[in-house]
Image (tube, rainbow, N blue to C red; front, side, top):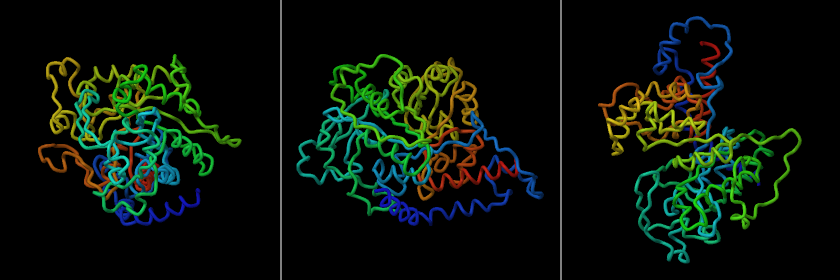
Length: 438
């Protein structure tokens, strides 16, 4: 099994070689061409080769940022597939990310959206045609409507296992020849893959599941935290969580988890973390698995980008994860662009929006780590407002190297990345510059 995935990895990485050329060019840049704010720090030291330094990053711990494989390695493999997770491990991602959903019959499965039409062949399966429907729900205060879709919560695991995953067709450079091969995975299958990769590939890979739309999946269940507790008990079984408060185990008597593959002597599991945009769920996970850090995902709640908001988050979150443009354009332009309204008087009372260049330091002051999302493949648009809106002033990255060096300099602790090879090369290059020119 592993050898097949290794072959796939080689093929996929070769297909990405053109995308890596820009990074190799960035590797050779002279100090005068370095992106702001690194140029000023290093330009006057280029003439002489200094002694090597002990490398200390601007992160909370002083260690290099951790790279989180966003949905595995979706730059080359269909996202959240078995191949995507194995490739992320082979490329030595620090963490490998799944998104969690729940089926009609209570199985936790891995998929980004609450529906399947966007990234699978479900529309071609006639026996599932009757499940196509419309839904409206509230997700973290935002009303979501989706029409003519196949929703995971309406399907049994048996039905979902008929479906095969596909690449997103709008990104033509991503290999399409793996489409139609891989099933939608259960959460348990994901954990088995990471555990097996820890043994077979070597490396303490972190697991970092995101609980998607928990209020949606808890509808019609026997109690309001069914989804969260099912995830907690599954993580506990696989050794990535310890339960620290009451969990309704009797409600999950049907949870038939598989025996564990024994870890060889000297091999240990990597770290774990939870993530959710639903801050009620994030707080619940923090209180019920205190040994597992919780990532508060941020994007549409204005109060969370104020000093008062960060003070609230630090009561339960270990890691704060905003959309990356909050660190470049800032809260005001990002919310305006996304039609998110706020009460200016209330925000002023909370201390006002934290300026983008101060956001990392303000989070660090509260002993929380920073994990922006998402850093894309270099062949994909970076999606910053400043690229299309000239009224957004300040720093604007010209390319992926420019982007990464800015965030490294800011001191981010984690980064959700696509094309892990590119991200690793840039992290290594920045480390070299710290070591020899700091």
